[in-house]
Image (cartoon, rainbow, N blue to C red; front, side, top):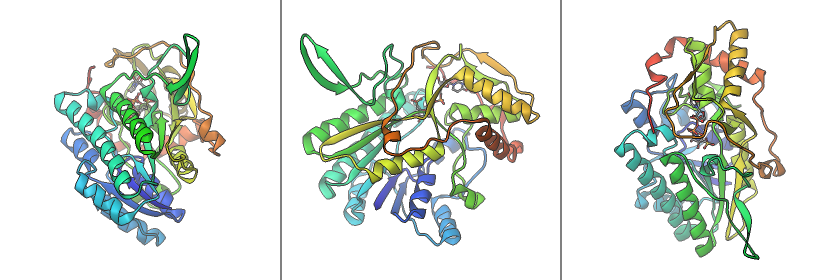
Length: 381
Ligand code: USQ
């Protein structure tokens, strides 16, 4: 398929681009280096450096003979984006081009403004560019499980049937986020839903949980094809952070009571889910929502698993509960549905001891590069 990957330089975007290119899709990636620039400006660069987008693509072609197209530019610039849609005429567009960090969005007013304007404007521009140039193009949008928050009822896959005073209807499942970043994802969903109803767009909104891992079949081909691996408080997700902390001898930073439960997934499964969504497009005028997770854990369970594997590898891993910098429930009910992607054919890679050993092994290779000051800076809500 002809697929446009927006945010194609990121943690998930780059491995997706390689995987799709290898499967024979015609891939064009777009990025404006927002994530790289923020990481450099705030001194939270990833564990190891990787070539820039054009360098990665050159290396990819050298190693595999496959071509990936690239444009450096900002999805918030409508002229740039609409021209791209006009020329390339994608059948599917994958929207990763958002500021993805909850703590960054809570850092200060500038970061809040950047998160809000980047995330909403990029989504609005994609909707318009599709409508004006390729109305049949399938929009695949990365949303987040954090849109739902942690309600005291079961979380459905996007929609809920409500009976009220004897009448019934179907609505978006109630959303109540716990960071500005997560709130922008709710607003994205609302924008998409409005234009789906109004213009009949085809949209899949993937409610993804925190992703972990640093290898896919394609990153294995050459070290220069690796994805970013952040372990800092702003851009590192909890499992990736805990492994780096264990290797560095830094006590695992469990926030508060550690009963926070989330749905997690392996980076390999992100790519598989996005491809399944692409190969099985939403219908015209359909906003299809999947909960993109494969299993749930509390933070305490993750810390215990990582401690066990770390100790087996000769690290002396300690767990330390620290005052929670975030405003979130630390002990709550959590029962999300996540059957839709499995019904489409997803075969999950679960968080086994073997997977953790593999992650440890890769991080240990870069142990000398871990910078302690990046691990915790205490961005408070
Ligand atoms: N946590 C700790 N200690 C840490 C880091 C995190 O206890 O050192 C806790 C957090 O308080 C939270 C949980 O672990 O309860 C997950 O935190 P996270 O930083 O891994 O994930 P989060 O900030 O929620 O955001 C990440 C991605 C985001 C994605 C989201 C999915 O950065 O792009 O949308 O996961 S979800 O959480 O389901 O909304």
